Length: 271
Ligand code: HPA
Image 1 (spheres, rainbow, N blue to C red):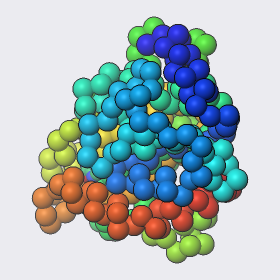
Image 2 (tube, rainbow, N blue to C red; image 1 turned 120 degrees about the horizontal axis):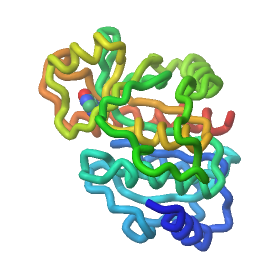
Image 3 (cartoon, rainbow, N blue to C red; image 1 turned 90 degrees about the horizontal axis):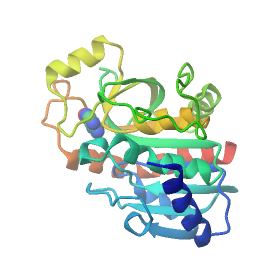
Image 4 (cartoon, helix red, strand yellow; image 1 turned 60 degrees about the vertical axis):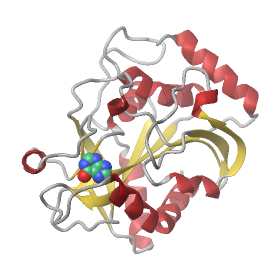
């Protein structure tokens, strides 16, 4: 990836809309219906955007949307690219970089994740406080583009403290079941084995998933403030009494769609 690729994508997008977005939003598996809440100015399928790749995952529509919601100018991805799809980490992080060059200062990442704690129920939310990158790769590997950020970015507060407490307050006020914790990011696409789940608990993860970590790393490199929210769509393998399936993931996300929208709308208003 070069700066020129990024600039080509940014100038393409700037031709599609006059809106200069303040906030970026990435909608994970089964959570894409949130775009119906946005007053849309431009909606573009990934495959029509230079240097974007179409998403291959069911439950991910693969659209970029620019619009307004709760008085905020927003650029949203309905679906994302994943490492397990065979994309390079750079490709996975590319949209985050494009959104930053479009002018956002804050990014809200959402995902579906497996819950690791006994007190979790499917349909709960987890506000991500930190992560452990177990993907075996990092989107910043290779030549550093110093125009984007430093060679060795600090990750002490990868997830913005103020945004964590705002999300927490909104959950409390609206009686939304939530947890706070550490997200373990794995490459997938297999779900974990029960032994891997025991290991993840032991090293300090409270949820596990296959996304978000590359975007968070790229966003920190770019100096963006990051908030991230998991929908606990299932209990992880070995904790859950049933076998895991993508269908269960998307069904749970659908079941809590209204709560998710309420939480996100209140949060965006406060940003
Ligand atoms: N593991 C990994 N990723 C996931 C899970 C899970 O249990 N549920 C939703 N995404």
